[in-house]
Structure formats: C-alpha cells, structure tokens
Amino acid sequence: MKKRNLLFLPKYPRKGASSRLRTFQFLPLWEKMGYSVSVHSFFTEQYLNNIYSHQSPGYWHVMKCYFRRFFLLFTVHKYDLIIIEKEIFPYLPAIAEWMLAHSKGYWVDYDDAVFHNYDLSNNRMVRLLMPKKIDQVMKLASKVVVGNEYLKNRAIMAGALNVAVFPTVVNTNRYKEKICHTTSKSVTIGWIGSPSTLKYLEPMVPVLNWLHQHHPIKFLLVNGKSKIKFEGKLESIPWTEEGEVDAILKMDIGIMPLPDSPWENGKCAYKLIQYMGCGLPVVASPIGMNNEVVNHGENGFLACTSEEWISALEKLILDPQLRKEFGKKGRDKILREYTLQGNFMRYIKLVETELGDK
Image 1 (cartoon, rainbow, N blue to C red):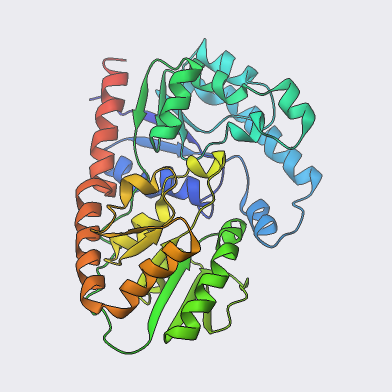
Image 2: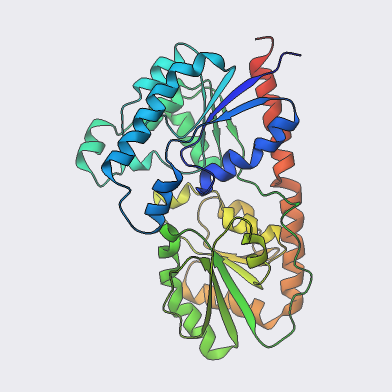
C-alpha cells in the first residue's frame, strides 16, 4: 500500500493544550500505522512561554509566525491530506482556506468556540469585517471535526456538509486509577488548568472558604505560580505534561466551574475527563459538554448556585464510599467513551475513506 503523507497544522506547539490533545498525542499512533506525518504549528514555544508569563510575545515574532506559515503553504502539494486546527491565519480573511479548498482540499478541527473570537470580538473592526470568518473556513472544508455538539451545530449552521464529532480524550495507559480514597479527616479538592482559565475559580473562592470553615479540606491548584484567595491550606503545583497525572492523583475531588457564556458552552470538558480518567468524583457547572460527561448523582454532581456547590462538595467530603463509587463509575465511562485508542481507530477510518485510491 502507498505510504500516505499527512500534514497537520496545529495552532500551537505541544505545550499548547488544544494542539497537544487534538494533534500531538495522536502522532505515535499515526506513525505506528505506517503514515508519514509532518506537523507545523503556527505559533512557537517562545510565543506560548511569553503568553503564559503574561508578557508580550513581540510584534516581529508574531509576524515571523505568519511568514513561516505563508511559505509553508507552497509545499502542500506533497501531502495526501491536510488537517488544520482552527484556521490557517488567525485574524486574516479565509483567503488561504479558499485557495486550498479549490486545489488540495482540507479538514479542519475545533475543540473551542473560536468563531466567537470574531463574531463576539471586543475589537469593533474584527466584528465588522470578519464576523463569519470561521463559518467560511468550516463551509469550505471537506470535513469538519469538532469536539462537541455545540461546535457541531455551529458547523452545520455555517453550511458544512461533512461534520464529525470527536471528543477530546485521554491516554488511559497514562491515566492511572486512584485506588485509595482517603478515610483521613482532610479531603483534597483540586483543579487543573492553564493560567488563562484561572478566572473560572474566582467565583468558587467563597464556596471553598465556607467549606474550609466547616470541614478539614485542602485545595490543590495545578496551574503555575498563580494563587487564589483561599483562606485554608493551599498547595500550588506548576503544570507539566509529565506530572499532570500524578498531580491529579493527589486530589480526592475534581472541580470544573464555568460561567454560562457562549465561549464556555463550546468547551470540551477536558478537566472532567482528566479527573474521571483517574477515578475521581467530580463537581461541575452544567454548561455545555459538562452535561454529557457528568451523570448527575452517578459519577459526580452538577451545580449552579453557591448553595448547590456547597451541598455537592459537602456530600463528597463527608462520604469516602460515595467518592469511591462515583470515581469508579466515572472512570468506567472514560474507558468506554473517551480513550485515545478508541478515538484514533474511529478517526483513521475516516481518513482511509477520504483518501481511498488517491
């Protein structure tokens, strides 16, 4: 059989969560199946390091990213299939996608509601000139791969004719199960996320402080150097890809609070999938895909108000057996529906069908 050449165009290098989960973690499987794979991210490691440190990446560095991808497009004829994460050029009209659609064709992948970067942008000129940019990218693609139903519905509304849902998944060979659900007095509630999402924890601080005043709890923040104004015992662990599973295994309960806004409705509930992959019970806001991942009262709780959050967390704090039961059911669900290998086998069938006898 002819060796297939695939070109992946993620937005970020491996350190960027969306690119790591939607592209990079699958690369060994593609290579194992005999595919030749090339990966060229738009932004660089330096760009991400600056962003995560709340520093400007620099105008000329960003311009170099644009020029680097521009010249890369002259090589696309070498590949059998081109898979783009989100868009070719951020904040430019979809001219490159239009040209590619009328020559080689392409697939496009979304795990976030990036169309809201345009239609709901704070920049008036972006809203005025390119409100439907991502809709055009979706419509021009020969296949749109999305992480959840919210993104699928937008793709269909945009006129995309071929849409497939592939949730963001975990490698369950890495995500070991938490066996010991502590019976000690202290219970660790935890959260994992990037610096840009730390804002989601701010409304939770009064809830956590109330729980601290009434129960012996600890809060584990897997993020970086950032902290929250928690009055109790707080442990902050810098995130690393190698250490994220061990960090989650230190938790007894995982949480995922979200506001009810358009951007958050497009999220793929990855934190929950991580927690549950390690056999943790969870509490989450009933926003977007969280409603699909959490079976309320079976593997976790969904909570809207502060009172509901307190009630849900208190039940889990006081009942180690309930934590254990929820954790087992949660992990069972991940093993059924959200595994790296399972997603890959579905994905490769689509690729083989697309390429056919090309």
